[in-house]
Each structure stands twice: as C-alpha cells, then as structure tokens.
Length: 392
Ligand SMILES: Cc1cc2nc3c(=O)[nH]c(=O)nc-3n(C[C@H](O)[C@H](O)[C@H](O)COP(=O)(O)OP(=O)(O)OC[C@H]3O[C@@H](n4cnc5c(N)ncnc54)[C@H](O)[C@@H]3O)c2cc1C
Image (cartoon, rainbow, N blue to C red; front, top):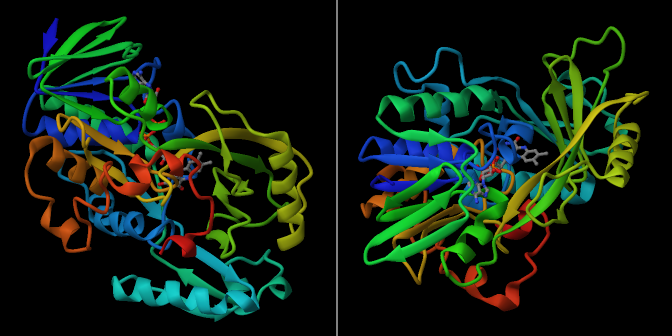
C-alpha cells in the first residue's frame, strides 16, 4: 500500500499536467491504465493552439496557457513546446458577422489578427478555392504544440518533485473510508485523501467506481486523415486552415497534410478508430474547398473528445463528494488549454482560490463546476452538438 496526498487518474495531458501542479505542494501518485502515457486522445490530437478555437471559457483557458507553453519554467523542457503555425479562418458571405464577432473577441483579449478577403488569403494558403468563400481572418499567433514533449516534460518534472507515475495501472476499484480514498490497480493499492479524475473519455466510469452520480461528460469520436501534398509545394509555412461553419480543417503535419472533417459521433470510451465514411467526407472537403488532389490516404486515425452539454470545462469538486475533483470535458481544447486547466483543477484539489490570472478572465467556480445544471441534469443526457458560436 502506497500513501500520497493526491491520486490522479489518467496519464494524458490532463492527468500529467495536474499531477505536476500538485507535486509542487504534496505527494502525488499518477495512475495510467495503458502501457504508455498519452495513448488515447492526447496522442491523437492535431496539437495546435489557437485562441479562436472552442467555446468561450475554454478559449480563455487557452489564453491563460499561452505563457506557459511559450516560455515554460527553467529546466522544464529541452525543446521548444510550441512552433509558429498561424491559423486561417474562412467564412462564407452569411458568416461574415460571425467572423467579425470572433475577431472582436480576440482583439479584446489582446490577440493579433488580420482580416482579409478570401482572395487575399491565398497569400497565406495558396491552395484554398477562394471563390468558395467571402472573407477570412488570419491569426498569426496560432502555434503547433509538441504534445509528446509537453506530456514527457510534465512527467519528468512530476518525478523530480517526488511524484510517482505508473503505467499498466488501471484503476479497477475506488473505495472511500473515513477521509481516505483507496484505488486498487494491477500495480498495487494506493491511498490518498483527494482523487483527481482526469481519465478523458473514461471520467464517467471513474465516477461510477467512486459511487457518485451520473454526470453529463461523454466522449465523441473524431477522424483524422493524412495525405501527400501537391508535388513540389512548400507546405511548411501554410497555416492551420478552418472554415467558420466547421466542416473541415487541414494543416501541414510532418511533411504531409492532415485533414479532419470535424466529425463528432457519440462513442463509448474505447480505442477509437477512423470512421470510413468520415474519411471519404474529409477527402471530399479537400477536393471541394482546395485545389489539392488526394491520391492516397497515407494514414488515418480516430480519437475521442469528451464534452459536457455546453462544451465548457468540467473542473471542480464533485457536488456529492468534494474530495473527488473533476478535470474533464476538454473537447478539442485539452492540449492547448491544459496548462491553465491544470492550475485551475489544482486550486480545487488544494482548496485554494482560483489563480488570479484565470479568475481575471471570468472563470468562476460556478461556470466550470461539475455541479452546474447541464452537467448534473440527466435530462441533458445527449450533449448538444453545434458550432463554436452557439456556445458563446
Ligand atoms: C482528431 C483530434 C484532434 C484534436 N486536436 C486538438 C488540437 O489541435 N488542440 C487541442 O488542444 N486539442 C485537440 N484535441 C483534443 C485533445 O486531444 C483532448 O482534449 C485532450 O487530449 C484530452 O486529454 P485527456 O488527458 O483528458 O484525455 P486522454 O489523453 O484520453 O487521457 C485520459 C487517460 O486516462 C486513462 N484512463 C482511463 N481510464 C483509466 C483507469 N480506469 N485507470 C487509469 N487510467 C485510465 C486513459 O488510458 C488515458 O490515457 C483533438 C482531439 C482529436 C481526437
């Protein structure tokens, strides 16, 4: 039996980052069921950081994460965690207002942007079919994240702070007696007064093991496809390119192009696979909105993104059991917003105030709470699927 101050469940970006934050204050055990960290969602992401991506509160957590990713603490990492990428958002005529609202919000938060016509946007990405769109916004500060280096650095710092990270340690049972939780795994039993549930698509299963009520935080599958770019093109400087109505995005990825049809299909927690129909849709979107031709799909994969009905973070103490802290509902922002989300979750686990910079962005205990109505109300069992705009 090993005892600690905190047990964190899940070795993706959420678990690794909050375990690191907590290890600065006490003894942490981080438990991961797979044989390597980041095997599920974290290792399957597009790994970009854009302050214009995701619902309102998540995009603020991205703003609050930027400084950590761009200038991590001394000795945290030997390689840069982010690299320049840029993001281009393309809008049809009827989406002009929506794009301008997004631009205003970004400017308010101090982000740099450039508004252009679709035609002028060809200078950023020469393969878009400009005639399909009316207007565009370029966000120069969008970055590629080295998510592998990020997770590895968090784990290295966790160990340096005296914490333990165990793989092949699936939490199979959780019991609470007195003021102590006991987690049983094939690697042994662990006790601590506080649990942090950072199990991604499995957060609901962990709550069930803890004997807590159902919370609406459920996984959805997304498909990604990789193909070769047009021969002779220099793709390295192309931005991550989205359409505002969220029907596709594509970006350069290790000398090739990654595209997603932005699918969102409810899924049980599992080793997600690419959906064949979505692969075909992704290829079709490339043919329709760009001048590129997908001859062969070189690689494809599926990954889970976990959402509350309002798509906002589920971070905080469980309303039934305050010693059970949620760090969940990351959707498509978990890597880019993970640094601030971890500091926020750590403040709940430590029972301290929300970090000042995060509170200043309008994040409150209530608006991210696992006790908020849409998360606890079983009538909201099917999370809403919609566009970024609907959630703002
Ligand atoms: C195609 C795609 C593109 C994306 N693009 C981006 C992007 O560009 N930028 C961005 O920020 N985000 C992106 N995301 C979202 C991002 O990947 C997720 O938000 C993030 O990885 C969630 O991290 P996590 O740690 O919560 O989940 P995970 O990485 O899934 O980690 C949860 C871990 O918990 C473990 N676990 C589960 N049950 C147990 C148990 N009983 N005991 C022990 N361990 C357990 C699992 O094995 C898993 O490793 C994308 C996602 C997809 C699928």
